[in-house]
Image (cartoon, rainbow, N blue to C red; front, top):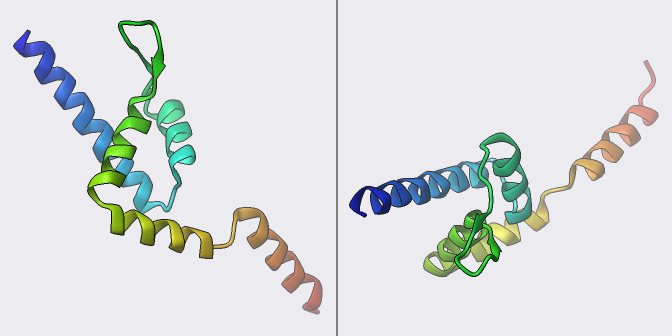
Amino acid sequence: MGDHNSSQASYIHLVHHLIEECIVFNMGKEECMDALFKHANIKPIITSTGVKKWLIWAVWKELEKENKEFFEAYERRREEIPTEKETARIIQDLLSRTTI
């Protein structure tokens, strides 16, 4: 039982660390979940009642609860950053106005 709890705690710590890495790259919760699912093989866990639960989501929510001011500022900052599509449009506009 102790080994199981230890490995579970290690796994949660890994997910926590990977979420922090996502934050460094300015990813939102959904982007982070997608990236960790695809690239870090973090899969949903099945509860004893058979319900799929995303550990990533649960850890992210706990981090939000523990660091409310940080996440509020983080979300505001993310809203101010142009999306990839907006950035591409801005670059295209600049290129179309530039004569070579």
